[in-house]
Image 1 (cartoon, protein in one colour):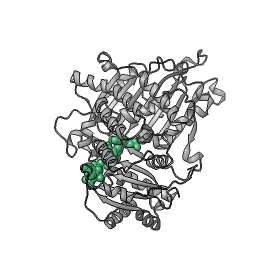
Image 2: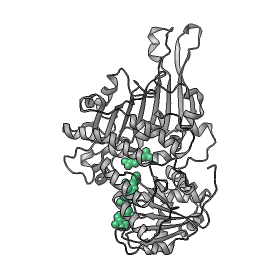
Image 3: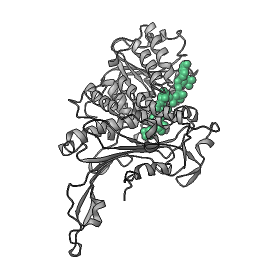
Length: 490
Ligand SMILES: NC(=O)C1=CN([C@@H]2O[C@H](COP(=O)(O)OP(=O)(O)OC[C@H]3O[C@@H](n4cnc5c(N)ncnc54)[C@H](OP(=O)(O)O)[C@@H]3O)[C@@H](O)[C@H]2O)C=CC1
Ligand SMILES: O=C1O[C@H](COP(=O)(O)O)[C@@H](O)[C@H](O)[C@H]1O
């Protein structure tokens, strides 16, 4: 990481025994320590309801780190020092008693970071209790997880509760996709390469595809997921963020507000999806039994904890339009689902063909250049271009080939940091450019809410797809109707 000035931090992790803290936050902090980015006097206060001694918490955390960190990145001595940074406080977040211990723990000169890795319903009460103890100052940074609510109204309640105690400049709302290196690279790709900057509009691009596919199912999270569904869980946050980064105008600079202002303009310009266009522009699916990695897997309704008859969607495909000068007439086809054939996230920019075609009419279908941006796995990109097929017998036959950039092969990158490493590091540096501002969250909900309302009003159940397939056939029909198809690498 380029800028490695350390700041001494006191990090309070509310919800320290939870899945997110254990699986993502503490391993990320360990990695920051390993990279020399945690100041020697930075400390961590793990806070949860579970009764445990400090020693037990440290021992358990070290075991967990050993389990989660790759063997060649796990250093026993470092892990021992790392867990010594940690203290433990047993606290019921909803009770005021006990919060005074937080003030006693913190070192006044260290930068205080409060990480709320808890259900969002806890954010307000934690913030108020911290204020009551004068535990936070104007310098305190507060990190909150998604989802911020489950619709516009509930997100406003959570945002208002946070705003009662903290200024917007203190709030770091996580969307972990923004912490992925390949997602940040979208900004570099678009605004550091004039080649693309000058071609990035409706004059040159015919359509855009965004696919975020997961091979896993619900993995014991049925209770949470069934109340959310794929639209709220993935589209409202991650996919709309990706769409914004692809569609936004150039920001004046790399400051958080310049970037976020441009993203908000895109969210405001998203065309409303009215009931009359739902059938052509929205496909909602739910997986049934099928296979994953060659093994039989149950359907959504047979997963552990499932409630019979649930109509929650595990797949969504949308045809999105952006009503502005840059993107008028350019559909963005986006899809995301659980239990798809593979875990794969990619963005395809389909360029328009040259204005006048002079080659073999049989080859006209090849005529569009495509930029394939592979977000994960196999991070990199390929620009599909046309060249002359070589050979005396080939005449002026065309063939399509990639200008290929696979990051791991081209660059001597030691390791790609996990999204949470980057995000925690940015919080420590006090930089908000990878975090979501209140108005972004609310515009995203406003747009997603109308789709949910339409589903509700129509009463139409999700379409079924077998686990291990690319979603309901209707999602293929949606794009085929426009004479296009979802990109498949030949
Ligand atoms: N897990 C993940 O991969 C992701 C999670 N998130 C978000 O992160 C947040 C945390 O998720 P996750 O870790 O999965 O949730 P868990 O349910 O696994 O953990 C919740 C944590 O909050 C604590 N807690 C809850 N209520 C109280 C209370 N009244 N007093 C004290 N402690 C309390 C629990 O303590 P105890 O165990 O002691 O009861 C536990 O440490 C949520 O907002 C979630 O949406 C976002 C993206 C991914
Ligand atoms: O936020 C979430 O993201 C994960 C997918 O994240 P990835 O980094 O593995 O692509 C998703 O599985 C989960 O349902 C959702 O809450």
